Image (cartoon, rainbow over all chains, first blue to last red; front, side, top):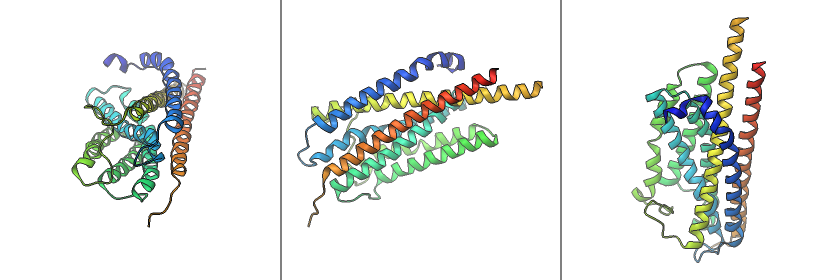
Length: 239
Length: 45
């Protein structure tokens, strides 16, 4: 892992990996969503609205995965001071926030026909909304530190503390009474029927590849900004 | 009494939102990256 913390080595890998992840992710997601929209069967109880599954579950997973990435990168930054760790955490923040917002929006669009309401203040929905606000706070804090100057350890500590919300989101449907169903995919398997399960696995993988490509693109942009700023400062000192 | 809702309205809205936001995110990230890397090359000169 220490070897990948070198910016030059990172750029060598990221230059081909970024378009590869984005293109393969877009193709796989397109195939999975075409299947979900046109070919997957309607479900016995939920009817056609079950098709929302193919966008809601991947966005929910990536909303949480984004913060897990922030927490891991923050830990690496605080412990080993890797130069790319802060960029990785900042790179995951915007896509994580977008997918958390998409999860809430698609969930609301699913909840109205399935539960009869756009929103309920239960554990799962509320903890997911808290996650979105944590993303807003992290993006604002990291941006302010970059603009005004200050220790990058502050957003890293925020990233680690905010990770407390992830198990709360995951276990909320088991800890409290909820309209929301239990997890669709777990490491122990899934009770879902094959036509839904394989479509869901494909769309989750596709969205995850796009997420990876976006994080790498954000990291490359942030790294380029830091390097350009350092060069301009060096030139100003030499002049 | 249960009101009749058109399920396709909700399916269409969820798919349109997810596709538009994901495409916008991927496009914006790619263009921002290219612009930042171009600015870095300009500072080399």
